[in-house]
Length: 312
Length: 249
Ligand SMILES: Nc1ncnc2c1ncn2[C@@H]1O[C@H](COP(=O)(O)OP(=O)(O)OP(=O)(O)O)[C@@H](O)[C@H]1O
Ligand SMILES: [Mg+2]
Image 1 (cartoon, chains in turn brown, cyan):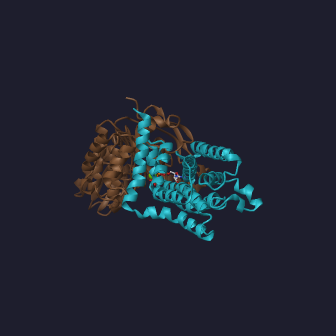
Image 2: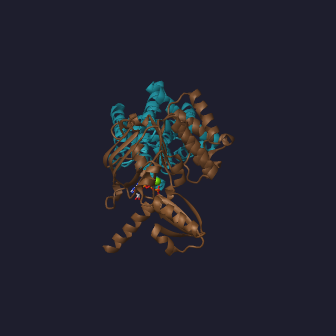
Image 3: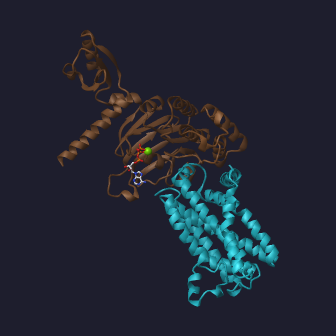
């Protein structure tokens, strides 16, 4: 199947920021249809810029982007019929109640009454909002409000859904309810492009991920591709008995409250575990989390920036 | 898919959600729209001992419809900047002209009670013919059109709602206070006339004054008034379609 979103050399320089580095520079991404795709990266990495260009809200300054086979710049009106988006920091119209918010959004998109009613009821149920459906939106907590926004777009018939930090500010249970709804959307063969700072969330939901840094794609692939791509794909924690100097030959060592955390290659990790267990230390071992990958990759580039700065 | 019907549905839905629902929850909104044109009308009627009442009513109607543009712009700036509603709708089948038409219709709801009061005053104190009534309706329709197009275009440029508060009053003054909306143009000193003729509201007011039976239209039987008003409205609609920033550059 053709990818849902294809970006080629996509570049963005904001009009008022001509001096600085581009917000996106020559980004090439191919987002498969019918899956959840995660965009991660530090604050200012360019996630929102990418999402807004793909959602036809912002003009690129270079390269091209197609959505569902159509050019998002030239054919925007065709694209817009088939997409939906919860922008970062968007808030619902406060004088509506939750039910009206979802139902009227669907009506605005041109859905007929009975279909809009049916979908509103089921999405409110699914996202645990049925109990507050008649409450005014501005009487809801921040997390509930965010959930109502997500409910709106997931209830739509859009084939590509953009969610820019949909779960920021949600409690752990509410996040999982949103995850469920996002998974269901992808089971219906819809494409979801998701940005998040919760890397467990990106890991749990995304079939593929891209890590952006400074407007460029640093890593791209399935979560296991990403693990395979980094230098130290295993993490070993060692508690008690051993000191830092005895661990250093196995990989990158850092302090944690109860002992040490070592990032290592698979074979060194195994050797380290056997060695430490033999010495009577408590050991746990596993593949790195997405957060570890993030810190290894982004952390390194920050160090590089710092050393470049020192040299010049 | 039936596009025109979809568009109409979207326009009516917008008018319902931004017009009827807020009015139902807070009817005081309606008083606000009535307040300023009627205080003007009151002063003018008192100060002229009733002679300029007709001008007050004509001017009040014009001001009420113009203020739709201002409210539209304030609402749209707020929705765009604070709620990110514009982005939400850009990434949907809702097209810019449909959004503007829907919100313009919703703002019209707020002015209906004021318009009803003006119609009663017209009926009681002036002698409006059928042709006059049609003229009033068409003039106000054009004013509604250009005020909405202007409000939308400005709203898409502002980065911050506070800019709106700075600029809107200037535009209001340019459109309603300087031009002879509340009195005949002959009251203005000669050298001000060319300035007054820069504002489209001068032409709209001239037609309205004629329609409510106050002598006019002063300008060649209204032909120039109509031509300028229509050209200005079309011009602003074209400007809105070319320059309004539905998608951010
Ligand atoms: N409207 C704008 N005008 C000028 N520069 C902008 C604008 N919006 C974003 N930028 C810049 O573009 C870069 C990318 O920003 P973007 O919002 O895409 O980051 P992000 O990855 O979404 O960050 P966050 O995680 O904080 O949401 C940043 O350097 C930001 O300062
Ligand atoms: Mg962002």
